[in-house]
Image (cartoon, rainbow, N blue to C red; front, top):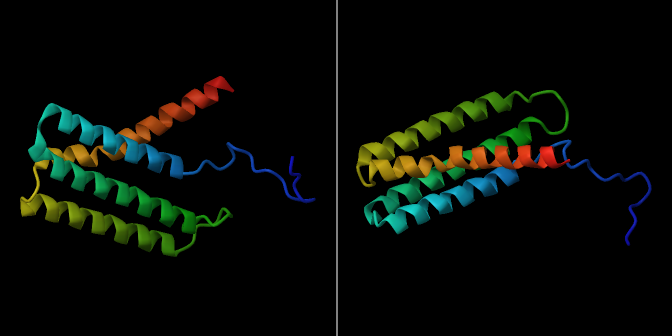
Length: 135
């Protein structure tokens, strides 16, 4: 149908995998965890799990943004990357500490919510492995 202008090439799909797909899998796994808690009837855990899921997703979102700025297309790492990453990590530790210390949320529910990051990355890895196998 529409042709590309001269000199413009289509990007290779596997050349630079996007982290947005992993971000969607993290949100999907958060939904699964929250639905599982709701189905099991452990409603006291829901706010903590939701809080943990939001923190896990926000953490990955910030990692993605920092990495996109750190590697703007070349191989050289920008110096601000290290400072931004350390500040993000210390902020994450502080938020998790404050949430657990406050006692506002069920600790087990909070940890289940945080685990959506691991589950989302695991789902992304399995999905990409299956895609590679079918090629």
